[in-house]
Image (cartoon, rainbow, N blue to C red; front, top):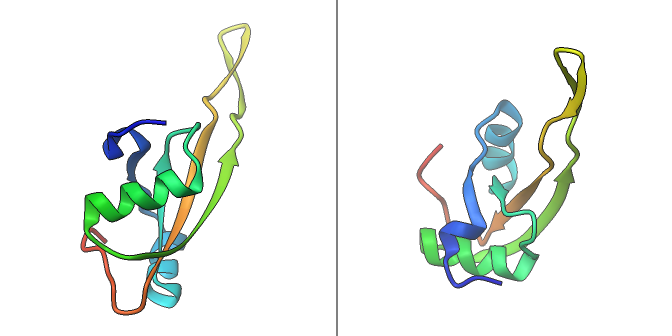
Length: 94
């Protein structure tokens, strides 16, 4: 896809569920590019943060139906990745 890891990994997702996953399972949630696959996400995380990734799970978040004045619209669709790190590895942003 791309060689730029910052184009694949947009930013980490900070939420209560994400914080619980970090503490209990050493799993970090990220917002990633919609066209990125698990292998690209793994390589991007390893190059950006300098950690060893054990597994990657992804899910597509569907856009929600909204209304702008009288016209129907929807929010953008995006992709979420749950990245599990190897034992002893951490990322220091949460």
